Length: 130
Image 1 (cartoon, rainbow, N blue to C red):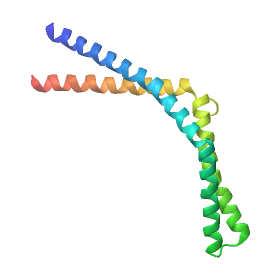
Image 2: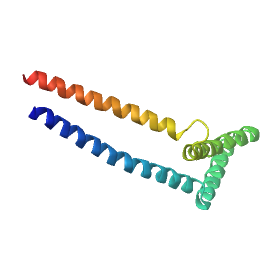
Image 3: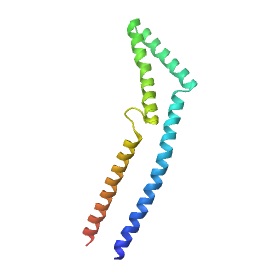
Image 4: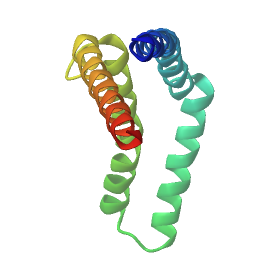
């Protein structure tokens, strides 16, 4: 009976620790994403992106690339940055294919799976000790 109480105590500690971790994750990740978006769309980032695009275009032209191809490749180069920004904005806003509820459900599902795995490992460990 004491072993069962010890197991329940450990499970409660695990749940409390998990709650603490998820609390931190739920506040830190959105702040991190917003910070990234802010840095991607800042005045400095825009200036740097323009310089990078100009340097990219210049290298293509110096390498003998035809004008039309150099322009098209430079446009594609810039679109990578803007696409990344759109993805991050959707992730933060919950619009599009990124939904907070779905992410929460997936996290919950995986947590339950890990706890079940941990419980199974403890049971197997107990059996091997006996």
